[in-house]
Image (cartoon, rainbow, N blue to C red; front, top):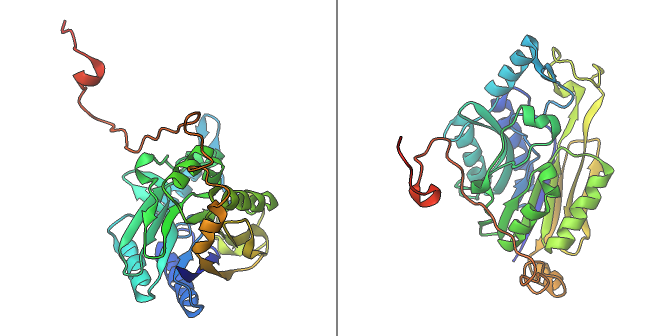
Length: 318
């Protein structure tokens, strides 16, 4: 199986999901014209990553102004089965693309950093919600659970997603390897040099293709009334990119590119995965299950449920 894949390096439009979806269509068109069958977008491309904004948070305190900023962020999120979601599905179908899109997803009163995946017919093939928001992200995003950790079978291969620093969770990576991930999508906003070492390690460890799609955001890309700690010079780079595509043997197929919006492409040959697993299969001949085992909780925990005597035993009534 051979095809061309693409990763997008750009930022969405903060607080304006409709405009961000328009950007998705723009880059989908560019990917299609480049001959791609798969395109991966950065972390929270639809919804935005307001880097440098503190939402008025101090230990034990929240400001009224910060609540207003969070309200705008909340109102700029998207939900399943709404117009933005339908539009994303239609874009995938219109441009005959498999798409993995980072979104700010609203579930009730909670926001999640998520990816929505679509096949080239516009059918949703998977949702992944970030299991572990990093540092201050935990103040604005909820935690994902085991129900959205599935690697999805598609016409191009088996697709899985780990968002940003989820890629530093060894057991989550292992769960993806165990599910046979071939096309490992890593949407991110991590623009550090060290990120490149991490992505190449994952490709080598999992013997899979890795697609790291990072935002490129300048101060000019944020509303003027916000006050990011980096200052107000419109040319200040807040997220510099570094998107890349890596082969199953750790070779760089495209990128990394910094300090510009761009589309990176690479030719993908799934047969190279077998070449890599010839000498390393971390969930196969290199796994030693007689020594190591991973147990996965792949269901959610209900907030309200009846107590089960089979679990808790009989109850004495007073």
